Length: 202
Ligand code: GRF
Picture 1 (cartoon, rainbow, N blue to C red):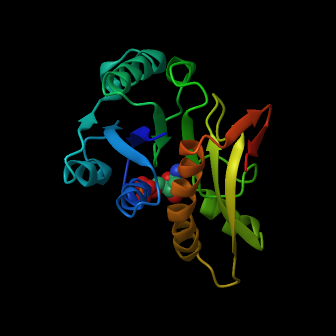
Picture 2: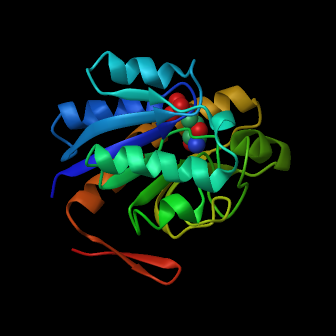
């Protein structure tokens, strides 16, 4: 089934770019139908607009609380025909108001091997902690902070002379492969959520 992706993004948008590139390369059966951002200046919006994909800025301060903001986001996405929501560098927690509208269809990428180093600056946390390996995780989103069932992970080494930036660069290369790969599994209907675990069907 071709995924109709709605991406939520707050920043640079390199994962969004990787997803659009994978689609163009025929590696991901999907279409990005809309990008919504909480930040007017998010470069992700430009990346979408330059491909003719509607990119909408929705300012959170115009809504009284997270639920009403998320309801407005969900309304926009559903009107655009979105069936799969991708958090592509989205810096806000999503609430049940959005998750309930796309059950089992909201995915996030996190720059660490969850459950290690959730939240902000996963790469920095890994360097400071002194782990030998880190990586990235694509997971289904639940209403916790980076706690949903894990779909795929990729591992990278952490070297003694790594800085947050060098490690982040090594992880980012993997992110750009992992997110499209997880989405393709979803497009092929091969993911089954069983409690905390995600089964990948043959
Ligand atoms: C990535 O490191 C991703 O793992 C995290 O936020 C960053 C977004 O980068 N959730 P980009 O906007 O996709 O370039």
